[in-house]
Amino acid sequence: MKHVVLLKSRAANFGGLEKSAGRIASAFVEKGAKVTILTTGDAPKNTPSIAFHAIKTSSWPSFLRMEQFDRFTKSWLKEHPADLVFGMDRNREQTHIRAGNGVHDAFLQSRELTEGKWKRISCLFNPMHRKILELERHAFEHPELKKLFTNSHMVRRQILERYKTDPAKIEVIHNGVEWREMQIDFANWTVMKQETLKRFHLPTDVFHFLFIGSGYLRKGLHQLLAGLARLPTRDFHLSVIGKDNKMAEYIAKVKELGLANRVRFFGPQSDIRPFYQFADVLAIPSFYDPFANVTVEALAMGLFVISSRYNGGSEILTSENGLIIEDLMKSESVSSALQEGLKHPKTTASAQASRDSVKHLDFSLQMNAFMQACLE
Image (tube, rainbow, N blue to C red; front, top):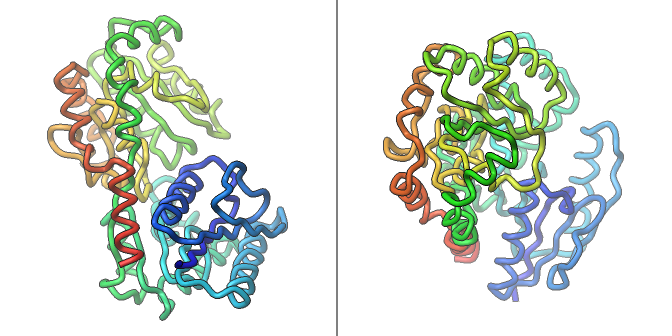
């Protein structure tokens, strides 16, 4: 029996990476492996087939917390050797890595577009960013590394541009989606659309754009709003899902652009499928996303998707199910993409076509790809 150790700090959280860690751990168990997860804080509940070992780390500063977790994993693995060490965070040593966070240096570079050159330079003096860059280099260039999984070809290119990593070690596996589990909600969208619009007191006779993402600056909400303001029509509505510390500033911007009756902020939502059910187009003009999960989720729910080349998820878009904004920094380019999006209202036929385009990304199939690559 193989012993697999997963490295994932804060495994009890409910984010996308934590969810992926749970799925990957369960997949190893199903393949007959003994699985241990090294983490920080509390261990997830109701996981009897998986062993957890946790360390209490400092709540502040963050760079010290990362260093403490890395030292803990190194010490534990020295006393408990494993056949396979699967890293999902920022750790120096592991045999396999899923780089779900992408490349930190590429992320910092993307901040020049939204915050200017000096912001990136100042980040290089920040202890947290310096620690992440240090851990990332050690991990990607470590001689014991056997396989490095990226969730997009964009991230693969970024790694090869910055680090001395053997290209043969890198394998691209796009993010999976709960394709089968979404079938009932997808099938009911025509019935639920009007019901949900009435429940949220939204207009029932206009085109509906949807934005999902926390951290509005990085996700490109400012560019989206500016693009909407340039549209020649006002027969649309945008629903904004997610949180941001400066939400009040965005609400003020909406009023300034004359979109007060065309945009509504819903904040974080525990269940976003009702929004997928009534929306026509998902707009996710990110400045950096290794692979935005909402890209594939929206397609699985039948939406047309507008995104940017800075979102690795854009690699699954085709002329039939979406489009990529040519120049994210030009509001006329964003507006042109949105104008094209208006030509794709969700219909029974178009929704089914979008959904079918990502059938091959069902979680079960993506997990099989991971397991085959890890256990071959």
